[in-house]
Length: 263
Ligand SMILES: Nc1ncnc2c1ncn2[C@@H]1O[C@H](COP(=O)(O)OP(=O)(O)OP(=O)(O)O)[C@@H](O)[C@H]1O
Ligand SMILES: [Mg+2]
Image 1: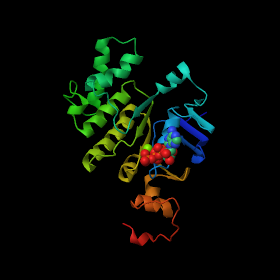
Image 2: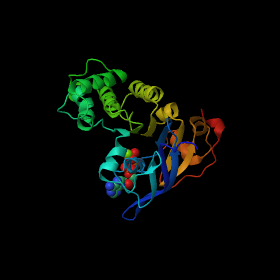
Image 3: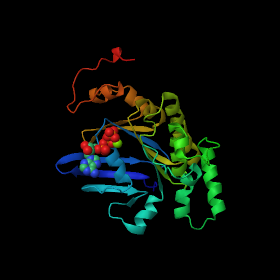
Image 4: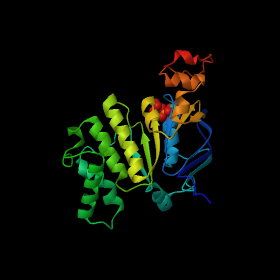
């Protein structure tokens, strides 16, 4: 029997009041793969990611991590599942009053009581090196650049050696060179740590570069799912607009897409 998918979402629906944000979403992320969720602002990408962390519970449907349903979990069983996941937040979400080394050590100090302070420091320094940083250990977040903060955020997310990495907009707000260096890092985390990654992004170039599969969220549904190549070649009018960086309005504009006019 093949192992269960790292992340499996089935028939997930979520409403806030009368607003249907997610409508019967199903997909699976196989172990070790990188999937990107793309879509316009307000389409429910962050809400979907919050269900994977079990920060939100669905109205109906299921979320399974390594085959285990997390929808009904709380307390220690939920903490245990969450330890399998590292989260990279949009704004890095570092603690301003802590040095970078303390930020990266934080989860280890909290959750790995079996480790000595010296071992915690060694692991944290190792993760900082892995994300390509040096000499930031004793700096505070306010003393380093946005791109460096993202790297520290990634170092913190991998400190507990999670099986799954969840990224919310990891390249937003970075210049193209820094954005592509974060893409490289996401690829490196996959290659060296064999993690399963779910990446939420507005950044089409980033998604095309890093994803094994891209899911396009539109009007609460997975409107399109395909490889980077399939997304590049899509004839779907709504996805085509998004890929070309045009505004995707709430009502799809159904027009003939002439592929000869596209680069
Ligand atoms: N806790 C909440 N209570 C009520 N409505 C919410 C809540 N969280 C999200 N929403 C609504 O759900 C919709 C989807 O929000 P979400 O944050 O998932 O969008 P997004 O696709 O991540 O957008 P962006 O690209 O701007 O980050 C929005 O209309 C938002 O207002
Ligand atoms: Mg969001």
